[in-house]
Image 1: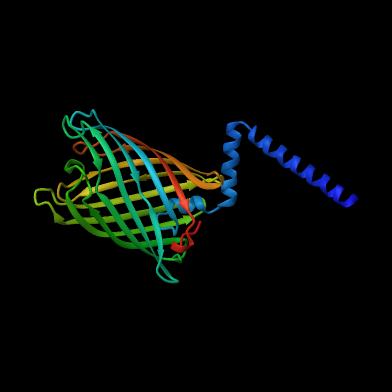
Image 2 (image 1 turned 90 degrees about the horizontal axis):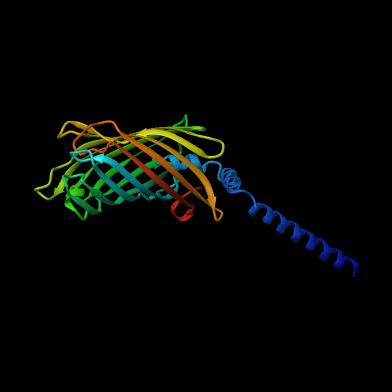
Length: 291
């Protein structure tokens, strides 16, 4: 009977020790607990922070952002608030190729952006498909090509195009820790829709350069620039972002803050903007997603 008694004694000591460690962890200051979660996320998912910055990476993610813009409208007093959802879903085609579906849809509330009026509702849906090889070109270069669509889903004509538009998109990214450098370029033309609405003939460039630390903190400088070939003018902001990968309930989550400065003084353009984004990566072997 000595062996069972000894085993029971050792098990009790082990449970007490585990409870003590858990109690000590819960008593840690908030800052230390946050640091602990960041370090755990970096150790458990060492490449995830890089993949989250690459729109061509084969990973299922659901970014959700809250955006605020100020200084728009003819008097520079307009402001707008938006909630944007932009899921990215990979699909396996064969052993060498996969397709990435990227959607972008927002709910917007704005005031004094178009005269002394207010608008609220859904925007147009922007849908892009990238066909991309599983292997890089060498030098850690990844690329993808495919079509983009602007689908007139806006619930208010003043925040939508009322046109179905489409065109080609291309993306190329190079990632070699700790750096990320890339560019997405697309062009769209209107092909159908309301005859009274203005047709779209526009190009869009999204360059980015970013740096990832050992604790999965990501700093980036980028831009979202558009050129209207009908009106012959540029639009869009420069953007600085800070993102951090962490664990919530044992699952990886990335939060990010961004500041925007609108460098072109086109009509009704805001002066500056800010955003907060939360990204939920999802491991889905059925769709080829790899955390």
